[in-house]
Image (cartoon, rainbow over all chains, first blue to last red):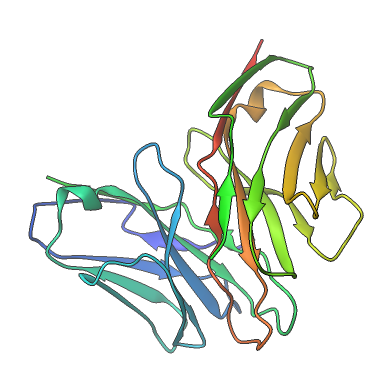
Length: 116
Length: 119
């Protein structure tokens, strides 16, 4: 079965540089979520999109922005990178569950970002 | 906002034993879902089991079962006949239900429990 695809899998950047992470959801999934997991930490929800509109917002820094495109893939743009941005960034996708439901989020393998 | 608390940073048991991981949460929501995710050394997030808050019956998935106590806001995971492959970080997570439809809230995770299965 097709899974969530994230690219790149590994990324190394210098402080103050920018980075773009890409996420390709499972076919026919219309909702995308981004999470950040620092070393030894739990995943922290950043932002989600449903049908190309922002759905929910978590602890996403102002230096980060994201969007979902017409083909449902999503990109997380990170500017003015800081050492503390080094983390594993997960993308997850789900199909919209409708009223009073919560469909399973399928996680991608993650992008490991290292800021030097 | 909701919080999820896992009070056991690390647990270690012998292979074939039964182990229970604890999770408590706090929320003002009445309808929600609770999840247990497994994160092995590969760092992949794998859904182990889910529980709908409106269901009184505890969820089970093969060797994995939960003890859901809604009034106490408790959601523990029991792993029976533990196997070496169960060694991983286990995260308890909370998901609010969207009443209006159209997308869903992000999950709120606990800090995790590192489970080690000894041979």
